Each structure stands twice: as C-alpha cells, then as structure tokens.
Image (spheres, rainbow, N blue to C red):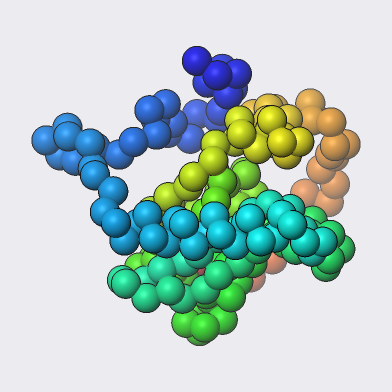
Length: 188
C-alpha cells in the first residue's frame, strides 16, 4: 500500500483502489494496442517536454473514436500559467477543434495520473475514460507532489491553508437566481 491509499477523499468521490475497470462479469478489461499507441504518444510528448524548457514532464492526448483530436504538454513555466498542465491544454485544444464545451465521446491519454485540477477539468469536460502511465506517486518521487491538494480538498473552507472567508453571501446568490431565471441559458 502506498501513502496515497491513506488519503481521505470527500464522500462524493468514489474511489476504486485497484484502478482497473472491470466488466459486468467482473473480468478485467484488457487494454487494446490502440490504447497503448495513444498512451505512448502522450509519454513521448512528456519525454520531449522534459528535455526542454517550456514546462514539466507531462503530455496528454485526446482521442475520439480512432482519431486524435488534440495533444497537449505542460507549459506552466513558459506561459507563466499554473493551470497550463498537459491535460488542461489538451482539453482546451480539443474543445476549440470540436467547437464544443463537452468531450463526452472522447478519451484522455496522459503520461501521468492527472492531478486534482486536471481530473476536475476532465470531469467538467465530460470525458468518460482516462488512461495514464505513471502514477501520482511516481510524480511525487520526481518532485511533483499534489498530495497536499488532496488533503486540502477534504477540509472545510475555514480549515484550509489558503485563507478563505465567505462574504456578501446574499449578493453572491443573485447571479445564480439570474441563471435559473434565464430561459436562454445553455446548460452544462
């Protein structure tokens, strides 16, 4: 058992510790050569990025059917953008190319298990399947630890290291009231 198996996650997160999906008859789903090809593409992007200066050693590929829609690498340092992770960059590119804010028919292949931000972006994009190569423990061992974020997510806002205080609660509800009253809104 790794240290990550001990991380407490919010109750709404359904965690499967074996990380291997199973079919209805409880047999492990075998990865096809296609998945390995796309994952190797993501790893190659990460390796190339690791030897450069634009960001960290991470790469991602988004596929729909048998077609690559987008590729992304980590560009945090070159773009001075802490959100410019490989998965987020690939999601942004795929959404632009498909002219859609949802990627429900897409699969994400990433060189490393997504961090909490990238996993959240995948959920928001509606991605239904993620394949990854290195684990978050491998990332931790290379100096990219996000375990503190997992720990922080589980805390109440007032208990987090980032100071958080709710102000103007009533006024803050008004945009949601406007949203609910807007009959032209686009649901997502």
